[in-house]
Structure formats: structure tokens, C-alpha cells
Length: 533
Image (cartoon, rainbow, N blue to C red; front, side, top):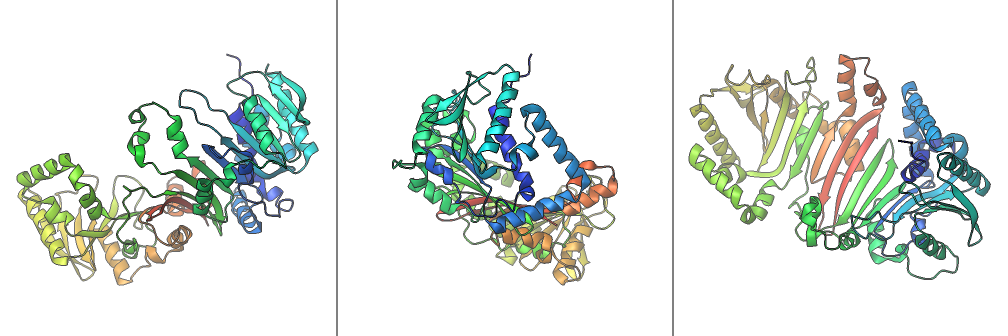
């Protein structure tokens, strides 16, 4: 089959990749451009809108250049970037560095104004800002020439007094390309192009997406300053789905009438990293944590922990949804009758606050399943109830043939599974120790020793480690639900095992990643923070 001409997605991708060259034109882009300015060219019912601001302000640009320069210290990264540029040139006939970087800006965006169902391809419009009209035209002519060489002819003409190129119908190409004074406009239909050009007229006074209260609320919910935003009007998307049975489409079937009005994701640089945050209006059935997650488990984990997962509200979630979980109730009753443990009274009743798990890598240990060192941190509000519940679990396991021994770890009473009882399974020798208001359940005595050492101050804790505190602070200081990974430490372990790992070398500048979620009374936010060392 003959290779098709340049796809519309590839056109946009070629423009977006220009972000990687921010350092090449930071001086030319030093001024600040209003974020999401192209929203004024779109109808207020727009279902999908994404925008990249190439003039987000001196602070954002400086931080972007710092991050890029850190990666450029690795020759392998420069090589991979050059290979990517070469691939773009091969596909599009455009040298990104020579033909795009000098003029692109101040904004690149694309939108789906109307969503008419999942069966039909939506009409799409895209805007590429141009600071040099002649240079932008030269790049477009190269793009058109490459398309025509792939048997996708374009007709050069004038539209509303603007140079334009109209192609043949194709599933892969934008049919209309128009060069205005400030933007290259791509559109997939004549009606969409006409309506867009109407809104781009200086005297246009009709309603636009920028004026829509819902969009303004989404922008307010997004982080600021930022260099990118993604906005989805879920009400418009679900309405456009028409009579489609949403239950056939996974998550759409779950949200139904409870779907938030909008979802907005924003991208921003901060000192030494990148943050992505997704916000939406909190729905009535969202579980709002009764109290903020203190992340106190980080004070019971060593500073070089590989990962930490933490969340709050387990007991509250169970209480909120217990009436709707007849199957689980039946399962719990069966377990209680068979094992003699009431899961609600003996376990869930005292599990309050934070529930967290940390993956550790003690000195001398290797990555792999040969030996696993991890701790589970269970916060309680009733010490006697917690000890009673643990005692019942111990009695149950002992009746099943698993022996336990009482011991001491760093001066704290601990309970460990007897030697040989569990050690043959993935190198596990589980046990637990009670520290402050946490039950710490470990996969090995060494993992529990690390928890005790952190509690006693013998080693620095994760809560004191910049690799952890930097992304937490960038995410807002806390999170109801959080996943943290120490990429730097993981890469070091991988490199120690294989110095030939090119992928690990490319990740070398990365320090950590943190995924977080917070459900507020009005707005809920999901985010990802990536830090560079």
C-alpha cells in the first residue's frame, strides 16, 4: 500500500515538537502572551480545546530552558532529538529547527468545536501563531509541496483576502490551510473555516468560548502561570453522544448524570520540573476526605525509599458505600464465619486516617523479586482496638500453621513470622511493629528496621528528602491520594546492574515523579509532578 501523505496529526505534532527548542528562541519570545487567546476564535459550545503558549512569561521560559539544558548534558539525548527532527523532516519535508523555530509563536492550539457522536470523525480547527508571515508561508509551501508529491494535490487561492490552500477530501489531511496576518489556520471543513474566519475579524462581537462562564471557571481552576491547557466540556461530549448506550464505553457509563461540567488540564514549569494538573468541578458523589492527608508515613520511611503510595478515607469510603455493596457484605460475612474475624469490627473499625505503602531498597539489595523490602503503614485512632484486631489476625494465622515470634527491633516490640514459615515465598519474612499511631507491617525484618531507624532519627527520613519534598510542595503541599517514585534512585539501581542501559541513561536527569489527587468541596484536582535534579 502506498504511504499516505502527511497526516493532520503529524502537522500538529511537528508544531508541538517546537517546544523542545524553546532555548533556541527564548530571546525572541521574551514577551508574555495572554493564555488561551485563540479561544476567542471559537464558538462557546466548543467541546475540546488545547493550547500551548510559547510566550508564557520570562519565568516559565527560563525554567523551561533550564530543564531542557539539563537533558542536553547527555549526548544521547541530543542524538535522539536530532533523530526525531530528521524523522519529522522525512515525513513532512520541513526542517523544524530551520523552517519552524524562527517564526512560530506566540500560541499553538487546536479545537473540536462540535462533538456529534463517536461514529463520525469530528471537524477540527487548529491555529499556529506566526511572528514572521513570510517565513511561515515558506514553511507551508514546503508542507504543501511534500503533500503533493504524495499525490495529495492542493489548489492555491484566496479566502477572505488571505492566501489559502485547498486540498482534496482525505481522512488524513486538513482540507483547508489559510494564512492570516498572525496565524496559520487549519480546518477540516469549509463551514468550520468560514465561521472561524468570521470570529477572527476585528469587529466580531458574537459569543465565543473565551466569554463562556464555564470556560472561564475552568481557566480559574487551572494552575497559573502555565504554558499549556487542555479543556473538555464533558456536558457537550456526553450530549453529542446522543442515544449511544454509555455503559458500552467504560468510564462514560460510570459517570452518567454525575459527570462534572468540565475537565481542565494545565501544564507548567516550576523551578526544576514540570507539573501537569487536571481539575474539574466536584460532583455530588465524589468522596471528599474528612481531613487532609498529613503524609506522616513519610516520616517512617528512609530518605532513599524507592516509592510511596498514600491515601486517606478508607473507612469513610467503606461507610459511604457499604449500603451499595451487598456482595462485599456477603463476602465479609462468609470470611467471618469461616475464619472467626469480623473484618469491619476487627480491622476497618480502627483503620483511620492514612493508609500507605513504601518500597525500600536497603544497601546491598537489588531490584527484583528475589527479595522484596516493603512496608505498609496503617494509621489508627484507637490503639487498643488496633492491637486487639492484630491479635485476632495472629491467632487465626497461627491456627493455620504459621508460627510467630515476639522480638524487639530498636527497642520497639515487634512480631515476626517464624523462620521458614513464609521465607520460601519471594523471600518474604513478614511481621509488624507499632510506631506512634501507625501499625507498620513489613515484608522482612530489615524493612521494619528501616522504619524504626527513621522513627528514631538514626537515618534521614523521606519527609526530609528533597527528592520527596520538592514534588510535594509543587503539588500544593499535600494530597488526599498520592503515588511517589524516586526515579533517580531507581535509575541508579538499574545502572548498577547494567551500564549499557541506554534508556536508563536518558532518564538520568530525572529526580522523581509524584501523582496526586485532592477532592475539594467545589473543585477536585489530579496532578503529576516531574522533578529534574
